Structures are given as structure tokens and as C-alpha cells.
Length: 209
Image 1 (tube, rainbow, N blue to C red):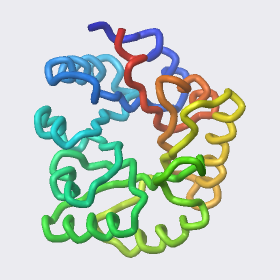
Image 2 (cartoon, rainbow, N blue to C red):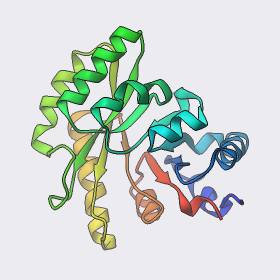
Image 3 (cartoon, helix red, strand yellow):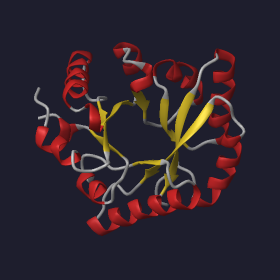
């Protein structure tokens, strides 16, 4: 396996950081990527992303460096937060309350991104008009803290459509809390995300040659 240094170099001249998607990799390759990026690219690294509980258990990466991005199942929340400290896919009030309850009982903590639905043809995600309801609840919590927004966007898109999605997230961030972070973009659209100065960009297959 070889790390795509040309891609990584594009991040050096921006304020954007990479969330390295290790969900495709076996434990040995994951350890290699983690060690390589921490040694050589620590300034542009926002740690690592997994999407399955089984993989979290197998790899046992540093909890404080591990992000979980996928549909959150209520029955798995207790286990997920043993291995991941940051969740990018929070879009359910019941899950939010359960997170706070579990963390308070465990003397634990978790950080979250609210997942906003920018594609009405897809299920899941929070409608924009519901954001204040979630924020009001989060401000009252002691063990769950908000980092800010992630998004469900279009699977197929033009450059203009993706730019519009990112701009919506930026406007929402500026409306509510200007200094917080947006998690968006993938290997397919990271260059557009870089142009829009998205804070955290999720890069997977494009990172590994």
C-alpha cells in the first residue's frame, strides 16, 4: 500500500483537514496508515473514520482519534461510544437523549455532528427547520457536545450542485455558530470542498494508491 502524497500535499496550503477513511482497510493496513499519517502529516490530520461496530472492536484504535460515520442504531450506541468519541451521523432526538443518558452513567463523553439532509429524495438526516430544536436540547446536556454539521448530499452531482450543498452548510454554520466545524466532502468531491474551505473532508480510496 502507498499513501497518495500528491493528494495530501493539496491540503497543506489550506485550513482544511483530512478525516482518513479506514473502513475499507484490514487492521494491519489501518495501523500502517495511522502511523504514516501521524508521523508525516499530523498538521492536516483529523484522525480516522470507521463505520461498523465490528471493525471498531477488531481494530481498537485510540478512542479519542476515532470517528464513527454511518447510520446509528439505537441498540449499538452503548458499544459504539466505547471505541469512538466523535459521531458524524446524529439525526434522531431519541439517539441524542440516549447518548447523554449512557455517557452520564459511564462518566463518559462524546462529541457529535448533526447530520443535515440536503437531498430530499433520501431518507435520514435532519431537516433544516428542525435544527433549533436539536440545538436547544444539546445546550442542556453535560456529556454530549456539538462540533457542528455534516450532511447527506446528492449521490450524483454536478460541480455546481456540490458547490451549492457546501454553501448551504457554510450559511447554516455562519447563522448559528461561526467558529464551529463542517464535516463534508469525500474522495469524489474533495477538490470542490477544498475550494470552499470545508473544515473536515472525509477521504478514503483516493488516499491509498
